[in-house]
Image (cartoon, rainbow, N blue to C red; front, side):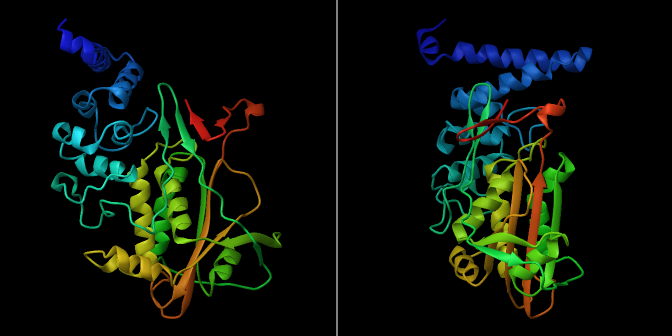
Length: 341
């Protein structure tokens, strides 16, 4: 073995890639279920291998069997400049967005450009420090989003006028948690009403609930909550990645402000319009491993089903784990969040 290769440890990575290829070939030709070793080998190379080797493991879309999408895994320890020359064009914009989440400013790199409606290639002043997973050798640790301070309550007694039809904002909120219901055991309810955010929350509640705690959320908190939910797959679904979560959060914000109809988004205009959107977090009774409970409101046609006047939309989404006392698999929880093995 050449000294340069030994120092770079490249022969070890060659071996992992050869193992992956052999397992995939055996699975295809013999039907033996060797996708597990193949997936793990690709994951290890993407996580810690030299940039050229790591980039070769990346494929578009979510990973059916794995700790997370390799577009996100590869971005944890590699810069975009290191990866870009070796990435397929189909995954360049996604990996670029993952690196933006980790603090890179890629506005000057044409290779990072994606769709016109993608979020900016640099974090904006009004965005949070998004909660990102920590990929390790055999597990993924998901950090927890700080809970909003719930300083008030919503009285259920007053009626709500529910709007029929589906607005862009309703669809956007449903898309955030789509894997929770499609791939896991999640429950999602979205209500659009005429009235303020309290009215939207009331429309979600059962008759036996008298009141629920609630509190305002800032723009960074709102984006963080939505992005964290949108990046996940819930308990059993496939994780979509931080880039997907941020993109979904921006789309919700655009729908709530009427900027979903513009071709070129001005980030400062979005920040300005968000100040006029009512933002409320609340907590319904019950425990869940994943949950998203927010309400957005404003005036005019934006977000509220197409008619002028005061409107609001609320989502209550939950995904539950099995009870370990009934033979299910309990989540492994750490101080920093959830560990997925």
